[in-house]
Image (cartoon, rainbow, N blue to C red):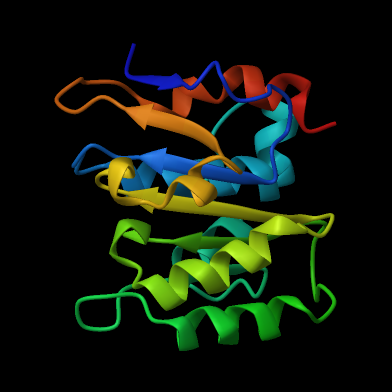
Length: 174
């Protein structure tokens, strides 16, 4: 398979996921397709990838307020970035049922940032979904990994990530 979920984690609808990208170049495309599967109603109604509606376009352009992407600030993700995220996500949703934050390269968080994230993950609020992306999940602290559903992408495997979500579209979010 092109990816595998860690069977040691409880099944269902986790509010936190860790994508172990294994240096797979299309990992972020996979994550963004997943985000759209959660947010876009067109994905649910026709079991298809929408990509064309206003909502999908806004997600692609970074203009959808319920999706926040945290990236490295120079070489690391810093505590201040996560404190800002926590502050932003403490407010009510403007649009939609879900608020999603994605932390790219979460394996590059410094110790203070990891501890700050851990506090945020310990008591997840309903409707908030965390997606952590790491090239090497072994570099993410164990206490964070233990709170996440882990999806490991297998590098150098050709697959259409959009097909992966068909079962997800067919009722898992209802």
